[in-house]
Length: 230
Figure: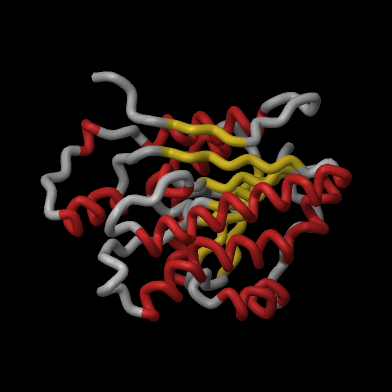
């Protein structure tokens, strides 16, 4: 029975991925930012284990995980959690840049580093749920796009480095997805939000799980998921 560690399982794409894996009986280890969130996840996904660590504090992740029971073998680590704050370069504060880069890039790098021995033990799989902003940066999206461009670089480097250990690495680049984050983005853009216009989280989850389930003779490296015709 495979064991998967996920970030961002409390909502949106992360929750959709966790649902698929949980419903088919896989073991889940869910990272939560605090004890209250961990309790919510444990109730939402009976039988899942939870770990508490704050992605906004990457330098504290090693100490946080060291005091908890982390599996010695992981079939996958799926990075989904993220934050977004739109605005022109001339107005975004250093604090916004720091938080965005910490949560979206530095924390995934640090978690991956800490869990590499467990991934190597299982010849596991790292999945980075990136964004279309990780491929193209548009006005108002500088800090978020920078973090996601960096996440692509992290994935590409990691893939080459860990190939000899049997670790596969996949980047998934969704377009706009009907999540709470997307509703926030529309509010920041001053636009009306219609969730039916965008991809449902379950469709992105299908792409993630397909990459995880691919036979060992192949690897899905970069997967782009865009809204389909209506």
